[in-house]
Length: 104
Image (cartoon, rainbow, N blue to C red):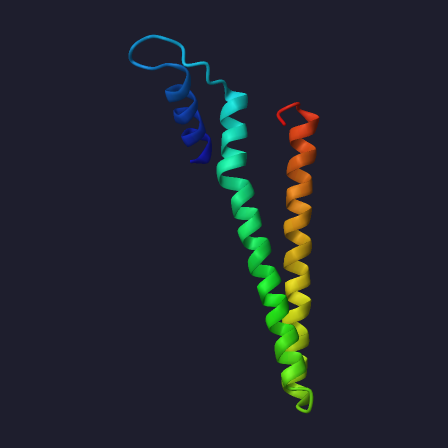
């Protein structure tokens, strides 16, 4: 499905009804998708993981006397760190791929 959407966007971008070429190439399409959709989504998920981590810190500190609540806060911190790591890794992998193919 995504492949057909990209093909439709590519076809609409390089040929318009007037017959003049708008100068949009597949490379520019991929750059626009990366800049307008993927990068903001990664930053949003990174921010959510950071908020989740700090929520775990607050739960951990607020419930220092209750072992079960402290363990719950610790789990929130662990999952927040995992989310942060995944988002940083995803951004790095995307930059590596874009740099390798000269799309950056």
